[in-house]
Length: 273
Ligand code: NAD
Image 1 (cartoon, rainbow, N blue to C red):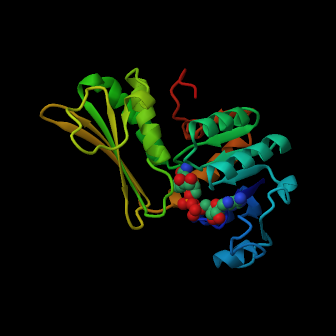
Image 2: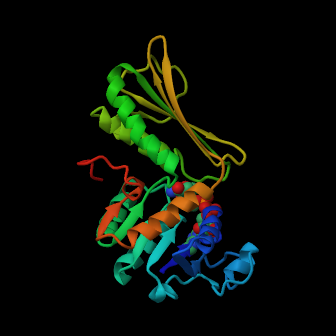
Image 3: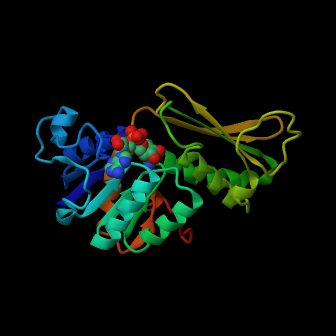
């Protein structure tokens, strides 16, 4: 039995992950961590979620409870996720990070820590989006630089980072396939008299509205036609199921930094992270 601690257990994603852990065989919930001012602190996580007592009290101290665990699942903020990784390294625990919005410096620190433990870090844990990462690379490879690439993402009004980690990963994947660097060719929104589009740029557009769970479209625009690939998440359950699948997978892996392409067996040979 894999013993899991969910960090950010009272958040939109955390609640779904707790519920999914409780419903999945082979994994047990042994800890639930939240910010010290969160209303769930001190309550049984099952009472807080309305699914009956589970014998796990929501705690603000991540150090309590990790002794009996095998894996930390973190959907919080970059600062908290880095702390989860530090604890994972110190306590030799596997770590699943779904948190997004890392600055380049935080990402570098995260990667260095992740390599010292067994870690799956992925901006999107859904099967559909991970298939999308794979096919947009194949499309970009076939269409080449003649087609303009634009990425449009839409999320709920409460999302804190923009563009989404998924949109950035789509851009990085396509830029990498075309021999470009997203940091150089990415255009992060447009306004005013900006002149003609360059052929190499990858445009990023962001929508924030209502309760949209997460939509991503990649447009490959040619002359006389365009090809669009769209993924729409209807609920957070697919992300939660992916996170639990990653937790069950990563505990059996050697030390290393993995993503959902590894968990789902989608990584092309020789295409290391
Ligand atoms: P949220 O704000 O609802 O949840 C975050 C939770 O973290 C909150 O409950 C907050 O109280 C808690 N938290 C803050 N400080 C903490 C601390 N010190 N210790 C423990 N918990 C703490 O946000 P959300 O919508 O659940 O998203 C969380 C993250 O997951 C975001 O970065 C989001 O982009 C990402 N996300 C990833 C995927 C994926 O598939 N990888 C899917 C959806 C969301």
